[in-house]
Image 1 (tube, rainbow, N blue to C red):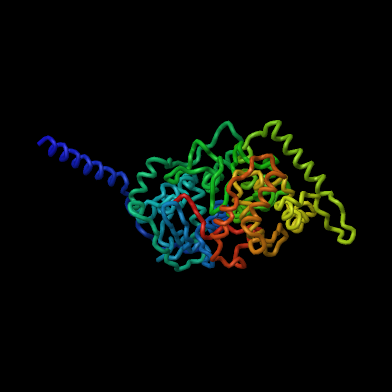
Image 2 (image 1 turned 90 degrees about the vertical axis):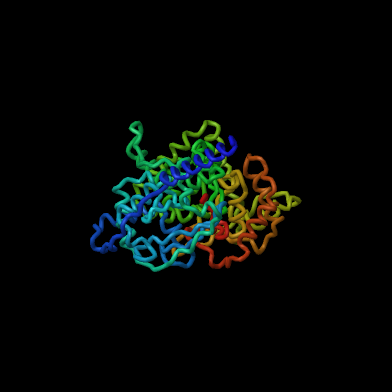
Length: 468
């Protein structure tokens, strides 16, 4: 009898808790509106929205390969299944054409769509919640004045219970803190602007912060480095592996051009970030650089000294020995040809990376390469395999890919040589299996179609992975 009472009580408790959770998780729909006319928006507001959308990289995630801009359909593989980016053009049937400004603001601020459904945090509302009403209004004006494209979004491929949207209310309860960015009175206006953009629309932590098993950023490891689309997103705090410490000036140069002489070229998923940043207001890019530089902090005397030494060594090496018959070329430095990695480097790499020539024909001296000093060989593997395609219509860094010329073993030997020769970091382990894995991820890709945006090595389309 007591057992029956206990089970009955437990069942009642479960029912009560279930009802309570449903009540907590439920959100009402917001009535649709007639699509607003383009002429109803102030052109200045639309222009500001365009700059903000560039910082938020809206077109990158909401455009599938070969698809119309922002018409959605891009598959985003996650550890939990595949989510498809939605159509955010003003199409009234398949896009957000019938969304009111209120509905748009709620999606940004709370991660809830017009119909009252919780959004997956692949849409980074944990960052977008910090955006002000005025900036949301500008973004709304910009999106509602784009070309309307009819494009159905494929159904997400998620297992139960993750496919039940209401479950996301529990994730939010654990990891989501809504609210607009609050300025720090102790900091300058420029610093606060940079923090607002980097932590909000720019959602830099979405890639550069590690995540827990449930896909939430680890707040205690802010900017400590993460992963994005098959690439390593390097730490942006004091743990940055860059051999030459970043400054606000060098960060600004990198963000606005995709290249910085002592740090190299933006590649992988960082390339479209820098390409979009060129469309943003120059003062905004400068503010983000100021903020990120402050997060990194002042380098120690030792780190600063090592950076200066790397720059000096690279400068001396670049002088090389001039080849009289070839003018602009240099002879490679002597290497131990008994080391297979050294031999590959001498034959395939040194004539560019030790040439002392400017881009596009000269390569970054590898003593200055963050990739060679980084925690994993993932990024240099991507670049060695698939190169840096030439940017369209502009001068920029280029590099051929060696996927068809070098075996997995040879690339592993080359990277082992580079790591021990050009950095003071411990050797990487298990390079060859990682090369094979990354190569396998591209096996069905037509390498001629890989993006050349910004002279950037392509992100692996089969590993375009986010947390959700």
